[in-house]
Length: 317
Image (cartoon, rainbow, N blue to C red; front, side, top):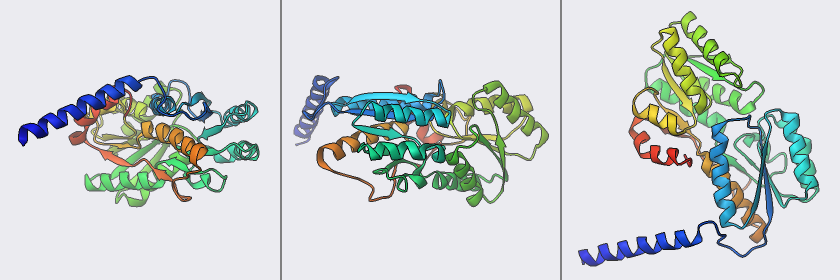
């Protein structure tokens, strides 16, 4: 029986692998080739959004979707990109609401044109009010609260929360969430996230001026390594923790350079947004019941980093 079980399992795995190889690069459905546009608030070179796109592209292949991606970190330009997608008469739109007030009219125009909209990553509080089908991402306040609880658990007394994009409501919610549940004190530091040398200088200066800071929380994976450099420059012993995960963060968690990370699973955000819009177009399905479809937060420590590093290195975590 033992041998039969092993043989059966091995055969199933081989068959699954064969089917996956056969389906690679081809859709798994015969629905029309709809065009879905994703428009985000990403700046140039932000690796987080590469992971989101990776998930969206994989789902688009499976669902026979023509996937269009565009981005701009200036809210007015992002809104114009949404308007351009509406003018192209795309079949659905995925959009981020980092600066919701600037995006409201563009989202309304899409909906007036009969184009279904899903919001991802940022804007969970505004998504339903703006008329989106649902929101895919983490609740930023809840994620911040998870960080505050973890800092308290680690015995930290004073944290520096580094906000790299002024006006981003999600970033404000994260730091506010940290302050809500952390037993210690939280100072916010606003930096220009498009200029890493300036980020490093600002964090280093703060750590040098206040030796009581024993934790630094960055709000994006690329800023964690910069904070590590700033810590070294300042001769600080503060623990560096971060929101988001990538291959470098996974490696630095593994070797103890970083304390912990908060993963919101960006691959899943891109993948699910495409999949949910396909389900809506094909079958009228809507997930969430008016509430966000949560992809995080998940606290990742040294214990989990090794298992996740393989996925992070291939660009899916």
